[in-house]
Image (cartoon, rainbow, N blue to C red; front, side, top):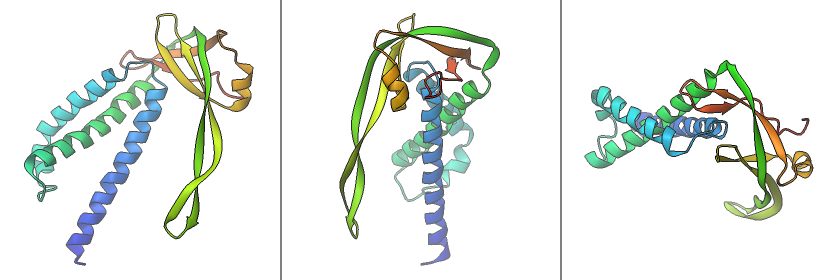
Length: 188
């Protein structure tokens, strides 16, 4: 294999890894933000289109072997993931501590989901392994919004359906409410 081919493969692997990290970070920030899913996605998509126009020359030199429409779609998708991470991350990181307040929420539903680990049974062969449970609650805010949270089992057992909970909420940089310190941990 020639160095140019290796370099191209390593570059693609680095971009895929970076997209996985940025996408995971955006998902983390979204779980801490009280906003409809389409709003940050729309802002990120508009930012991606703007970045695509600004960096058109640098981006067009990459992926030259793909058809133009597919190359443009891949670039916009990658820029949307990066912009989503940046938008949600800035909203979370620059939340105003002066706006910290407590919101009363009601536990609307509590449920558990059964998941399975994978088990290796041979070279390159995996099967369904032992099961485990993920415990979740869905809460409703006074303005009608709902949000789902994962809980440890100890906290899940102490929470009752219909019971009130207090969440500490701050306003983020873009005005989207952010949950900084969740009272839903086991030690609360």
